[in-house]
Image (cartoon, rainbow, N blue to C red; front, top):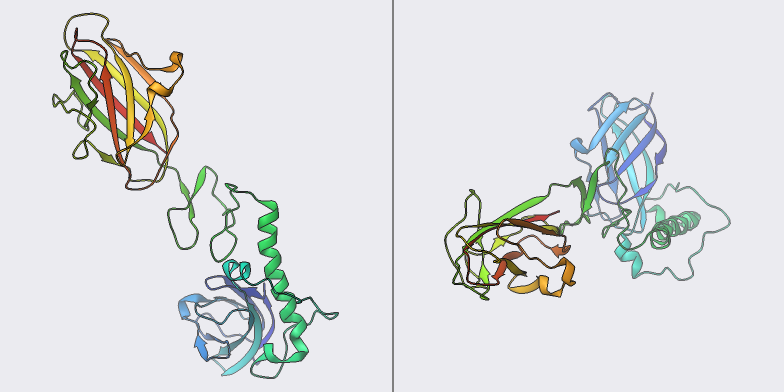
Length: 328
């Protein structure tokens, strides 16, 4: 039986998306070649992007670099009997291109034709112009649907090429932009925790101190007048929000009424949080053995450098301070 294509679905798409060829007379797995022609030359789809499901169904991934906004000839060759068949799919514009191409005056004709023609460049054939216009409008509607039904921050995000669907099995995951060319990806949220510590000597009263990056427990004895821009910084390795700040204080010498009365966070050497800006009942007053937590919700990017600065109220005691920041 010679190769025969009956339909290609969904019949339109962009580079990297899947098309399904339905028909009959196809060869066994690995015996079919798929080629596409956008009018500028024939391109062989790599074998790794072609899957033969049975003798009537083949899937292929649209290769990059095809001319957009036109019908593309698709040829399937059964290498077992050397028969071939052709059909067409529509190469969609990207959404960025559509945003600058309002397609004035293009409406679907009375006949929503399928893309069938014997000529080598079917989209230039007036007999199927309605089909081209219809596919243009269908692509345009995809963008309009996004603009009308979703809002900034919605999970139905889109990249520069098309809408980003929520994948199956994404429960408990979150959408990360992360500067990816395809607009982002869904992945499991893994919070990052950063630690600082320091010993604030009794004599340091009213002087802001920069805590030391702290990984191994204990209370580092180094003392740094803050803010500083060297080894007192820790860099965020994820993008997200600083959702939690914890401070814990213990005494290191006898005395009373000594506490931490101010906490600041610097991001890239610029103040991003100051406890003095909080209402009085929310400000930290960390006595000799005490803890304090706050959720500042600061937006951070990968590589942002953070410092934690604290101030002590009097000269009676030496205090040990541990700070923890959670980014998610």
